[in-house]
Length: 338
Ligand code: SER
Image (cartoon, rainbow, N blue to C red):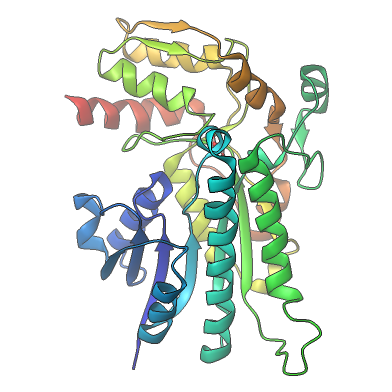
């Protein structure tokens, strides 16, 4: 008998930290974790097995298939938006080819196991691309099917991988004689900018939010790289984890679409600065605009419409902006750096 597990790629990343801790603490499932880098010590007790390796290594993925019965794949590994602009072709390799490898693993596992493997995929507000600020302000809350014209490699990768998820779950090898109808159960969440108390993101463009806060807590001056009035949606990490697990648990029949927006609050950069300064009044936070990164954030929606997620799988955030700061981020970050 092979062990029943969930597979988590990008285990060492921001979402990986939150997800592994939550699944581990609640004993929801056995975890096999995969990451290029060695696993943070705090996560080791929660994982049944950690494999340091590459999602581009198909031999490695094949071995996993031989060893485990994988019920869900949380495919979190990716290069974020800013980093991807520096090395677009590498980003494409990691974000797209890596995802194809995992999708294929999911399909093969499904065929062996007879049960659809759930493929939980974090996408992003980066799939949207508003042409200018005026349109962004006029459009307000964006629905899943609107403005899917990303201006970053990362955004292009994410929207394409959403299509791949649809293809692998519904049309994979549709002309083959031996085609089986049984395929993966692809479920995707488009996340806004995420803010965690435990980790700082690397290489994203919504990073000004978390960076402001983490630098302030460490008494380090910080130059915010977008204008004070810059607005996109954000979410505290516990809500992001809640969303992933809610979507994993949802009965398949209740899902009316493959990709869902989720959001919690939509602060301006200045509002994040104000919340940060309330907690750390001596913090030195200034603005030094990086015009190209500003362009990227300006192309992302001011807010998203997450009503399908609310209706189909009971999504609702627990943390609005003041609860995020006052009850989660500030106390935990104080603790962390004290
Ligand atoms: N937080 C991501 C980034 O900034 C967007 O999903 O790249």
